Each structure stands twice: as C-alpha cells, then as structure tokens.
Picture 1 (tube, rainbow, N blue to C red):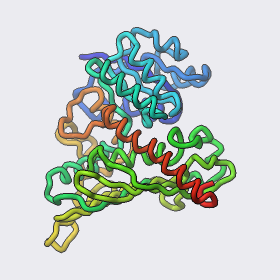
Picture 2 (picture 1 turned 135 degrees about the vertical axis):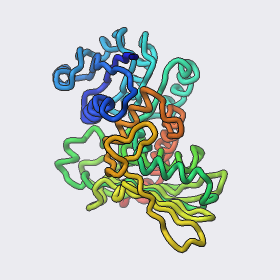
Picture 3 (picture 1 turned 120 degrees about the horizontal axis):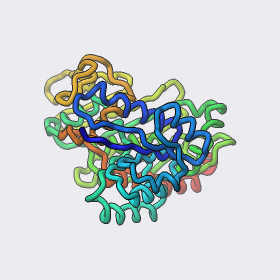
Picture 4 (picture 1 turned 180 degrees about the vertical axis):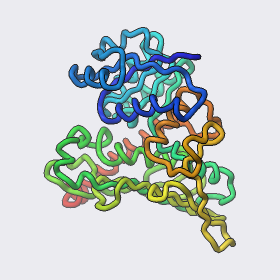
Length: 367
C-alpha cells in the first residue's frame, strides 16, 4: 500500500477539520493510501506542540524546520490568509513534496497571483495542487452540477448566489477573529465566505465571470472600513451573456450558515440550498412543476457509506475532497486546481477595488 507522509502548515481550527477528515477517510473508502501524520508547524511553539500531541503528529516543528523535513510527501497549507502564498512557495521547494492542499484564498495580491502562475508553469507537472473549495464536493452540489452540465436546461440567462451567516454581529465573536477582519482582498466576507461562493458559481458558469459593480454594507467601530462584513457583486458571464448577483455576509441575522444558488436558463431553472442539503431542485419549461432530486450522502460509485439517504454534512464534503486529493479516483467530479483558485482570487481582488470605489462615493454607507 502506498504511504503518504503528511505535514500541516497551520494548527488552528481549520487544521483540526482537516485532521479529522484525513483520519476519517479509511471509514468511508476501501481504497486509500496509508496516511501518516508526520509534522505540524505554526508560529507559536505551544500551539503546534499541543496540536501534534492531540492529533497524532510525530513532530511539531518551526516553519524553517518543517521545510527541511525530507519525510513529508503532502503539505496542507492552513495558516492565516496572509501567509498562504509564502507557504506555497516554500512547499514547492521542499525536496520530496508531491501533493499540496492549499486553503483559500490562495494569495493576497496581484503580484502574488502573477508569481503563482509562473510557479505553476515551472512546477505544475511535478506536484498535485488542490485548493480548499470543498463545498464543491457536497453531494447535492455534485449531482446538481452534473445535471446542469447535461445541457437539459439550455443556456443560462440570470443567476443568484448567497453565502450568509450572522456570527459577526456579536462583538465577542469579532474579538476572537480579529485576524479575519483585515481589509479586502486579504480579509473580509468576500475573501472568507465569498470565495467559496465564487468557486461554486464558476463551476456552473465558467471561470471567465466578470464584476460590473459592488456594494458594501455594515458598520462597526471595531471593524476597519475596508473589511467588508456584507458585500454584493453584480456579475456577467461574457460568452453566454448571463448576468446575476453574488453576495457574501457575516452579519445576516438568523441565516445560520446559508448557501443558496439559483440559475434561470432558456429551458428551465435549478436551485440548491444548504437548508435542504439532501436534494437540489430543477424545473423544465413546459412541465409546470419543480422536481426535488433527492441525493443524500450519495458518493457512488466510489463509496456508499454511511448510506445514500443520510443527509450530508459540511465535514463530509471535506472528507471527499481529501479522497479526491489523495487518489484522484472520481473522474466526473469538479476538482478545484490552482488555476481555479487563481480565477476565484481574481474576483476577490477586483471586489476590493470595486468596494473601495463604493466607499469613496458613499462614505456614510461603507466607512
């Protein structure tokens, strides 16, 4: 059996979710490599040592020590947004790394985007790179995407995507997450939540989506004006002419963790909502009825565990993202590679420019 030695750059909350998902793979899939937790690195010695001990990593190392570790085959880049690019560069230079899992956003500036493209051309053939848009592996989203790409609903006309939650309305929550309140494109709702929404839209609509304008709402004294708490984009897909809106919010009360997608096309329409994650809906023109297509936790043919009728959860999609990362054994699925990550990052970066324009024009609304 193939053995893959894994290293984590980052020891925070998202790293815990990745550790869980990797450990869970063997319960869901019969054919996975032997995955060995080799090393975890982070800026704070006590946090990486605690993480290593709790989750079974052989070593807790400084970033410098980590990058010299010849045992590591796969690197998970899970630190703060501002160090993603730096850690990505370092991972590519490590002697035996063959896999890189890069959490979003992939970088924080146009200069970093350009350098990533150069690095991809230089190293792309030697290293498998996957970006952390695991929402694409939610079972109902996977099936909805497959149905959409069948062409039965025809050419898209307009669309709407929302990714909302309300936790940042609480000052205590904001205090614990100050590092996420940096100005866009490094921080803010569109970089943090919206990047998942942009990724989802691009899977359905293509990676040439363009922004035509942006709005920003929400004003708290302890949040920098440039860190959007709610932002909304007007968008166009140039090839089909389809237009729509995409919004991301940290301050929408009562929404829980809501992802809602609607696409209206020439021959029908399609809907998905995380509030009813076990199915998606579609309408075919002339049928006079919406159809609920039940999916559950269906990941056939690669696995049927725990059961197709069981409602899917957020961590379940992350487990499947790791399965795709380590095995590549799910050919029809949409895999978010670095090109996809950079396409999403282009929108995140351009959002920051549009929001700055909006704030300058409507200072009372955005400052």
